[in-house]
Picture 1 (cartoon, rainbow over the protein chains, first blue to last red):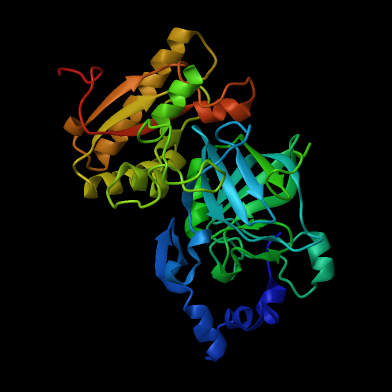
Picture 2: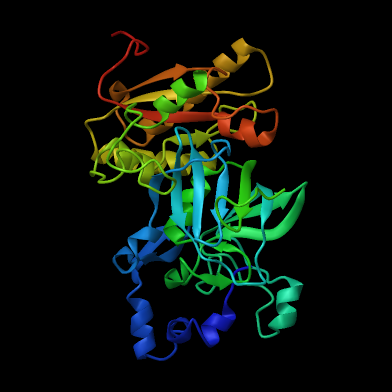
Length: 215
Length: 164
């Protein structure tokens, strides 16, 4: 799961604190530099990413991709912080992502069986145990909802794995190990991905490309 | 062979070798190194060509419409492109039923694009039925990919365009 209330409160250091947006501070200005206005979407709005502040390597691009995965498959390379949508002709659409910290990672094969626009966020019990300060529920579209504008839910054999692809309020966290296990993307990118993955899309989460394929 | 042919159709340009980037994973794909505004590559990267459908249906869902709106916005800014709306199916029923369904899907997308303000004279449809699957298996993982319409940018009308 993604949230980082801990990030909010203490760290992704100064930047996380800035998201509290309570006190005008240096940190606040540093965080603000990662945003560029707002974008309306399905009745809510998100802060647009200022891509001038983002390393081009994390920006969406079409790359060569050599593998035996069938076209349409989503592949996550957790170590290198990339998510691929496999296309024909040995190519893929690649996005930069943030992934779970050590100990909160998940690997394996799954399927996108559910998708949501402006999903509500409910911290799972194990997260509440670690972080009793968290709210029990954050409504979809709320400014502090860590999932952002979209979520794609990973299932295996009909069961929700509790693992999902979603947006982020912290664009500086893309390309890093940050969340509690989910895959976070720029809001612009998760909106884009949502349109490209019909329900039933196959997903493979790897430690890194080239490893032995997860079962 | 069909796969090869298909893959050539998917991305702009069928040049299988592009010496500008090495043939390794993560190197930029051919044509995507220096993307020009208004190019087919920009459309593929920033908008996306595919629209998906539910089983047995040619109804444009709310989700599909979100893609179509994005496509129409781009096509309105880039008026030089003609649009071949290509329908596909991988649904229960005979081959001919799938062919008919794929054509209906393409027509539904063409109508939706027209509703968004794209002139009909820029567009035409072709239904391919089950001829060109993205991927082939009996599970939903494959079928969901194949039940689609591809908005294909063209510089000229082809033989499938009516009255030309």
